[in-house]
Image (cartoon, rainbow, N blue to C red; front, side, top):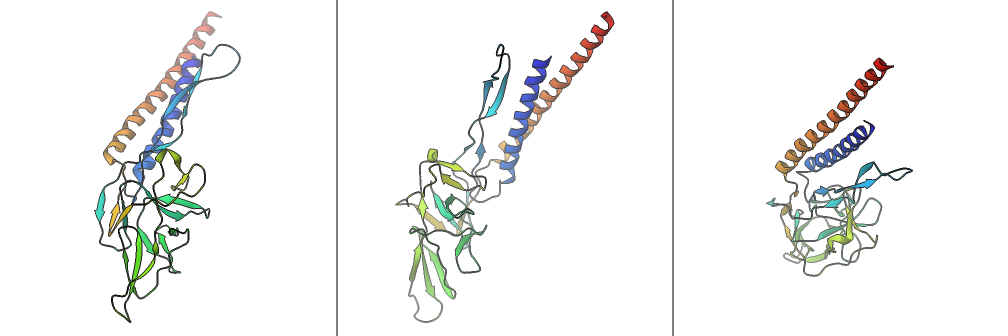
Length: 248
């Protein structure tokens, strides 16, 4: 009985964790540039004295689906979508360089170009990009930001800087608890040549809502099955206890 109870309990816990992950992905179905979080499970024997009659399930390293999301036109200058693979460099909450696909940018209160979450966008030299007031801003395909003054000499463009675009191998990066990506070595990635961005467009989440909802239903049913197995083990134990009491 205890073996059935142990296995069912372990299975229920794994399904509960899986359900939380799918729900997290589904909650970000409208988040610009979001990448689906994936998890693989593996069974390990329980170490201890006696025979190895028990096993438990652990989640392996959490992975990421790096497939591209759908593009939508916004017409907003500070919305940028990366063409193909790669990331936009930002300064994370810890003050270190991090990477995101979320190109919904804005001008902060101090004139610094930042994400809608308030993270400064980094230039190629690792600094911030200061957007001057009273200027028409354009963002080129290579990430170069230019300003044309609204007063004074017309059509005189001044280059503010170029956004740092990186494209490290996907196996060398990992997602942090804040949703940003970083190199596993904790070092800044070099700027990638040839990367292109499109101003006035945003990349959506690559979460497939239909698959996520279907997965939640499937995982919920598996969780219910494991709970019923635990209830069956408890009923069997009660029945066996009654039989033993009758024979005593």
